[in-house]
Length: 494
Image (cartoon, rainbow, N blue to C red; front, side):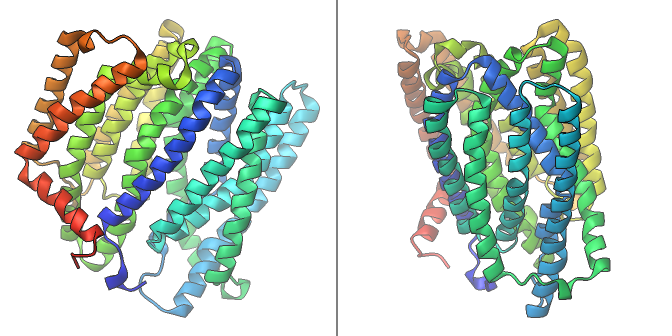
């Protein structure tokens, strides 16, 4: 794709946002059904095993998806692309397969030695591991080529295919975590097969082009990123493992998982979409234009993002409990505080991740790992003391505190030439309007409305009337940014 043909970060973000809205729509279909059909214990088993899936996938990939993104040959012709396909896609995929086979053997030995009543879900998780890793690699290729439209289509198709596979199974056949994993496995295999066909047609991957020295260069970059990915998984999900082993039952894991998974939809919509769009553009900008171009992009993104985050946080404070009750039902009300606090944590994390982005551009993967590992260690230590004392909420507060440390470390260690903060006036305006919304909602008692769905409607009206409208009136730069994006979408801007 030529440089002039490359879409800007706004276009990428809109694509990913639309895709994530469609993914969320799939969640809005499956989540209410699953929360009503599965008990807290089954949800706990699902969340527990899913954590092991993420851990094993992170380890077995050896950071290969990060290497693909960072070492993609933006300059160079067919020969450079052939070396890239062989050394940074084919060889890492073969390494994944070898590690996966070893895992199958190890689990087989473990299952034979230990009597496990739920070993079936372990086999299902391992079966799903291989297609999941391949999908991650191909997604990284899409991101490296700035093919956000392909990434979006694959992710949306995968998620809806999961819904179509899971819901009939858990409704008619097996209302258990095993049933969920059977559906997920069917979807993952089909998507991985389709992506394999696409890659074989578009990207040269031949053994004859391999270069062990070049592959090892990628491994040296990727392993710290793998360690960082593993630390990120533990930072976000180690609470589930510790809840199970410290409290001795899966029910608390289920309470935590129901609230946490709904909070992840916010993270998917804001942070995931934005980070993927920003990362794939910033890598090219840094390589071709330097740090000044990256910082300009940061400021443009942060100016809009600070309003989005402030509005979302006050929305969670005002009506987050109601949102969970509408989605999961009153039987899962214990998960509401988890959803609200974890949702706020991820919103702030999404904002600060843009402020402190820069270590990857300097290829400082070891430092990236150290920051995540430090926050993960703190999370584990806090969980050791707070889970026995406060139960599920101890895990929630441990997550919040460890993410605060994580973001402080990221910003302090970010290279100075790549640091950026939101515009001060925009920040003050956003915070002031958010406080106004909270004051009206709090002192009006949401105008006496008690139904969760009706309270959500009232909260939406308050945000539109007291936040979005005044923000557009008070901030000319915000109006101009939205106007430029709209004109760009209509093709009137070059």
